[in-house]
Length: 577
Image (cartoon, rainbow, N blue to C red; front, side):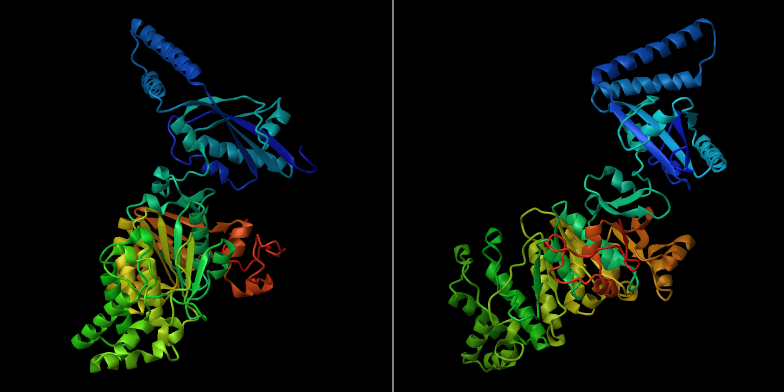
């Protein structure tokens, strides 16, 4: 008896099945009772391992020869053991594997003797189904209980020799549901398994392409899950670029020292005439920027330019660069770039009526009400480990051109010649899909991101906007990872058809709680529930009611030196540990 009213019984695993798969201990770990399972591992030195294998092979071979001398038939068990021992000996000799002394112990707890006996009977029955032989620590109960405590002490010493592969299959966090994780070196924790006791991890960088799509109804926890993915990607040195239409990622960026560019706020600008950074210079950089400036002006004016207007605009753009001292010589590309105001002044001073007409039509954006976005150089460089482009403050009249400037800045980062893993996150993608330039950007990124060692993460609550268009379907088709959280009944039929869901998966997505969903990586699927540490949960929280209750302000972030109440809330979109 341990404590008042608590009884316990400790068992050691003395017999194992001949073959096991990944996560084969999960039924024992997920048994519906209080069970402490301890796994004690001690590596065997290479000389000792070689000597053990040599003696083992000698014993087996001696038994085979004795049986042959007496005229007995071959024993299949002995033959199989001989083959396994021979293969393992060669693997150890070549350094492809190692031997370990492993002990597996479990302590079963209950509130009474009768309940303990019933629970022990159920555990033994399940263990027999797993081909495990349990022996009770009858005369060493205290030592057995201490062995299952988190002390690292093995007082029973009932062990079996395992090789590397067999030991790896014992660990409870391995899962055969997402097979790509087995070959991964940089997996990201997604959450706990929705159908078992293991963890669900995925690695976008180990897949055919690095893109992902998150589909969920409003309030299902998609932004919460995405922020956890961003944080855990930053831990691994991935540069993250976020298109944030609803100002949801600013607090996160400020907490981790990221860069925030709030287009539409006073004195915040991205100059469309900026040339690439010093390491990306090329002789045709001016021409490429001139072509992009044509697109910007066309979006500003809301109409395609005629041939004469294009000629006048092109002349003015090149003249503005020359006036700034920038030519085809890459040594001049580090000088300050011209602005739209400079181009408009050259157009206004031209003898061409078309040029003067263009200057007049551009006046609202150079000297008028909308001049704040274009009347000066770039204020904040889109560089850093986390860059958030917040678009909430953009006036509706400037949404299209603001989005175009942001997407261009992101693409210039992604296509940069410096090799680095980059993740582009587009939240509320249905807003971007409404803009022709935004839809084309998503399509381009989905197709070409892998070639630049980058991934595109698309998050949307409107499945129809993404699955109902050719460009949206192309984005989904080029995403190696699809994450489906709770779905609306009105959209479930379309989602079921697009992702070929079974009846059980369909029912699961209709009734999933916040933060729970289904991840699809090729032919592998797994149900999960998002989990976060206390600090991660604080930074990822988006529920306005929870934020108000926590009294969150810009200064009250973890690490700022102030005390903040970050107790878990039942309204949180994921589980906080």
